Image 1 (cartoon, rainbow, N blue to C red):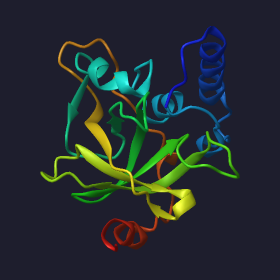
Image 2 (image 1 turned 90 degrees about the vertical axis):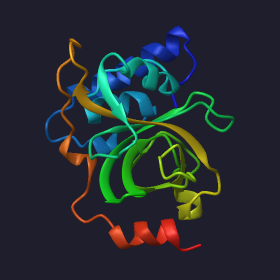
Image 3 (image 1 turned 120 degrees about the horizontal axis):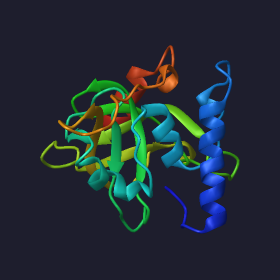
Length: 192
């Protein structure tokens, strides 16, 4: 979720993104604190700017899009009542056709605060057609999938659209951990 476009907030967001990108090689993306948009841009390599809900339409002329999850793709959440600015997350693992893991920033609360990074958390396709148009997301406070269903536009891949003047995106290696809990992810998705 990206904040309102006040000059101060834009400056702070750009500063956060610059610090994330300029961090020493030994710095971890997992230490980032801030909005989901600069985090997803830095981790996925997909160069789109602006509020999360605008990424899907912006990607149309730049990057390939679709409804099949791939590691490194950005899942673009649509605007909704609980997400008025949308949300973006990076696919870190594909577990099975309707269950993936994502790494994202600014979702769950940590000690009452937002902005932290969560690595390899469950994202479950709950759409009736199995087309990833509706999802549930793992939420730290409930230690499982939350009860809210979120609308999703689809996945933005790091491959340029023919003729687009953008480089192929490169995903940061820390998008996934060494030992993600695949079984826990499936339990989150299917044990109700």
